Structures are given as structure tokens and as C-alpha cells.
Length: 332
Image (cartoon, rainbow, N blue to C red; front, top):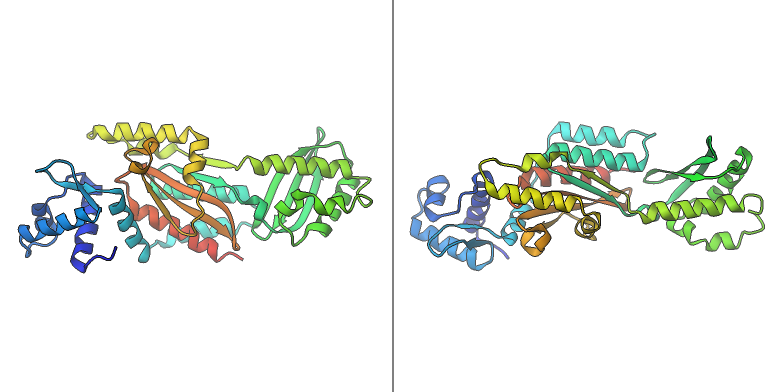
């Protein structure tokens, strides 16, 4: 909904005030803090209009107003139109991406840690796009105790996995060369479908069991939807002077402990930042979740989300997520 310049200014200003001190919004407060030359009667009409539009709601008939989920969403969308980032934020993300030997899983974990530290809120990363990664090379390296390291070098980074096998180094090398030759330029998902392998049975007689074991281990690996939860910052949500924050913190900790619910809430099909506010879901009552897709070299490989109270620092969170999205978008 398009707002007038004054309504836009009032809504964004009062939401920022509410995030800072949780004080209900009144016309007198707007006048004192933001527009002293406008009468309280006029400001009351503006607040009434914003309430009728669904951006504010009144707690009591004669009391002040507070932001609604739609109000918070409008505020966040405004922030994303003109966000500001620090050089230190950019450098940390760039350093992480420039590490050529780091696995994709480690990069995603590092991003989750960076965002959690930058925002001071719990962060969840769910790797859910490994099957879409385009293979450049496959390498199977035998280790000790009948175990082997499997490396998939893809256009978006290195994927590491392990598997049980007693195959010799030569068999591992032959299988690696075969998989690279057959699947370079194809996705991991296409490799796991096995149609190409079914047409190549004559070529893989000496290492067919090794490849079958590799496929089984990769299907299990991808099926897990790797999840990285950074919950150390949950304690920062507590505010000793506000009883509501205790309830919110319990809700957030409960959500962080429920991986299936986390996957449902965090996984996103949007190509931009998505905001979910607690009233839309009883399990998140009083809380909010801001999620974004992680796209590397054009491939969506994960979803990341920051979880906190409904009056959390949206500006800082949106900025941190936008930095990561923009920097990853430049990766080639």
C-alpha cells in the first residue's frame, strides 16, 4: 500500500521508537519526538489512518498503539531500499569467500557465524540446494580404517563427504576419473538419479560397488538438509526489566530446538529477504524471523534466517543479510 510522505515518515519513526523502548505510540509522543509543528489532532488522524491500513494496532481503547506484523514488514522493506554497510562487514564476507580450500559447508557455517555476531541474534543456516550444484570434478581419496574422503568440486564450492570402503587407491582413482568424465557439467542431483550410470555398466565393472556406495552416502548426505544453528546470542534477547522478553526467549529457544519446525519456517523460495512475524504462527508468538536465500554463482544452495523478538533490530539484521546476499551474488 502506497503511503503519503508524512504517513511513511510517521510509521517508520514510531516503529524505530517502539523497537528502542517498547513504549506504546501516541500522537503526543509523535509530536514531541518527530513533528512538533503538527497538531496532536492531525497526528491522531494519521495514526488512525495507519491503524485502519493494518500497520498499527491499539492495545486498549484509550491507550497507545503498537506496530503490527504488516507494519514491521513495511519498515523492513523500506530499509532494504537504501541499506548501509560497513567496510568491516564486507571484508569479513570477502575473506570467507576467497578461501579456495574451504568446503562449501564450512563457508555456509562461517556465514552463519558472521551474521549471528553482526546481529547479536540466533542464526540458522539450512543447506538445501546441494543437489543443484554443477560438478566440475570428483575425487575419491582412500583413508585409514576402510574409509574414504569424497570431494565434489563444483562451480559454487567444494562439497566434502565421507564413505565406508575398502577399495584400493587405484580403484578410487579410476572411479574418480570415470565420475568426472561422465558428470562434469551435470548437477549432483543428476548424478544421483543414476540414469547415466545404468548405461555405463560395462565401464564400471571393476569399481561398480564403490560408486554404488558413494551414491548411497551422497543421497543420505543431501537428504539430511544440513542445518547449522548459532544460538549463543539467544541470551542477549533477555531484558531483565521486561517480563515479555522471558516469554519470547523461551519461544525462540523452543523453536531453535525443533529442527523440523525450523526447516519449515526458514526454507524460502523467495529470491529476496522474507519477514515472518509471530502473529502468523502460534509457535512464534511475539517473535520474528528474517530469512534470505544463499545463492552462490547463480545456484541457491541454502537458506539463512535470523530469529529474535518482534521488536528486534531490523535495520542491522536486514543490512547484514543484504551484505551477504550481494557479495555472494558477485561470486564467480
